[in-house]
Image (cartoon, rainbow over all chains, first blue to last red; front, side):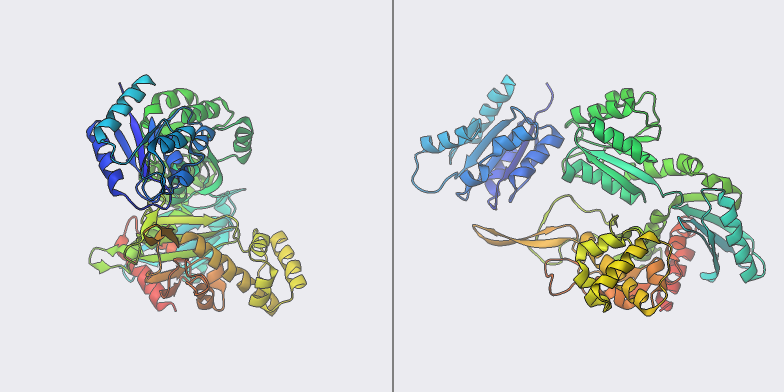
Length: 137
Length: 461
């Protein structure tokens, strides 16, 4: 099986790069080809990178509470660019205020993300999600 | 006994000659003849040689006779990539860096309308890119098939996804195809040197013949490169120096012409202030941009449309209606040379405007992004604020009565604080159009070429 390519980055005007770096390193160690876009990445840049590199999945981080705004329309952007069915994950402190995780999870799955990772999600869980979801493709 | 070199530029309007005394690093003589490539290139060359002979008494024996060319429309190229900001941009930079004149840029899947347009543009070379290595191959294979089935008979260069090489070769089975390394092997990593080398090879081995320039091959030993490349090589030599001769360091060259304005920078363009985040594609140290919409004659109307008539009125002190009338005349008579005071004033207003816009587009800019943790400065393109030297070349600069003022218009100004144009470089004027000659000479005798450039530029004020 050929090596899978994954795009990572922190969306919007968000500079919190540390968690994203840790995920990228873990993915590389697990044998994925990682294209790491870093902090302050507009949604369009995730999509452009995914087109040229024929990525299998995009992992979007958002830690500053504006995730719901930044990620709106992300799936449509992918579909528009011909990335039909690309695997999309989102994770971090996705919204501010008092919402239960179930509510937050529902918002992001509704937006077209395949999975949303709550604060404190373990790296092992993300890796096993990927293995499961990419294996299906 | 001194040694001599003859440097030739087969230009689009003139055939220019520079005879150089290599030991003294001085211009022995200059001359020019018309560009006669459409009939027989030798006619213009003979005229230029005779004129040189007349001014010198007799021609010395030349150790080197080297030429560059932008005759017969220059090196016309079309580049094709996948995403506009990524492989499309990388392919474009490779072509510009090779001295090409870009006549078309295409992204994503080519359709039948694109194909018809490409055939009509009749390019000399087509550069096909798309996909990082191991990345997308569907689009580039689709494009290769379309081009392969077309009636195009120009040489093709493939510099896209390595994984698609077999399918692409198959698609071009009946065409002239050169395969080289991917212009973007990894995401956001530029690798344009191999594509540049491939373009230059095709230029020397095939295009020169196709354009009839090799008919004059008895008059020169080697035709080395397209004219813009010669200027770029000259700029690189002046910046970097040669062995024990220290160069001038990071520099910019600006070259306004009748149809386009070229800007070359030899500079990393890294942020001059700490803590600035760089965005977009990485920059190459040697970079050429061409503004196809900024020319003093063919595109005078575009300059007017870009800045508006009021700007030209304030620069030239001519009233608006008269300016429009004069500009219409200029674009219909691209060979006209300004005569009266009004024409000269308008010409310098057009030149300073074209130079300023071209410089602004070549240099990067900054933008302050507000984040949850405070403001962050992001930089797009090159920071050239700290550049030490700015060189003006080309006919417009050489013929200007006040080239210093023209070039000063290109420097950073307080009304555009986000533009990263040079702040206070020393300005040098290439009065006798020596840069192309230094670029050619740098390939065989870099020491003489360097000394010639320095002698000429710094003492020619």
